Image: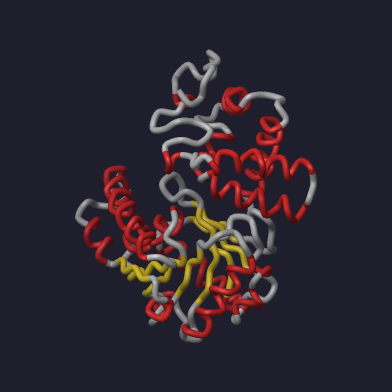
Length: 307
């Protein structure tokens, strides 16, 4: 299989990351199919992608004349048979559950042509955890995207039995859609950047959950010393607190330590209240004008981060 043979992409999961990845592929000339379980999820995703496309064009990466052309390349379905037809490469962004990922990949293994490449956008799991369950472990590897609106760095991570040809093709595909691939030679939880980021979030959540310092003080410390525009809690809001909770909850159940369980419980309170971060206009901060974006956030303590 050659990179020129990759023409039709299937996105599994119409959430935030699935929308971004699908739109990115469409803007670069690929035909895109997006699959999710319910038609209403897809309808909402279509509306969000139309808005996102406009913002991306305004930001400069893509010419305005490509917006409608890109959107017209995107088809959506809740029918798995239709989703699998003629697909060359799959990008999976379903919830962080290895059993679920293995099951959906196996269903597509039965439906896709033998050449189809499977990639996972998992944030914290390892491809080897569901590679055998997928039905084609040699054609599966991780292709992990960060927030595409702010970076074009991606991770390419094969597992022990991934075919070298597949790793090369996935790397070439990443480049074809304007991304800069960081290619790992070994599996690693959280890849490269996320491995470091998870340690930061774990520490920040632990301090807040145990009352060591309030959320804004933790962010002020990080931002003031590292000279960044955002701190760990602002980052978690941008990721989505539902995603942060799924990751922290998974590892809390695996590790079963007081610290991990407390961190998961701390995030779960926000999720239960529907405060999922930027996408719901409230998480640890209130949007679209979060406290950490104020010019005096670091120099003057702001009592309420949700004002």
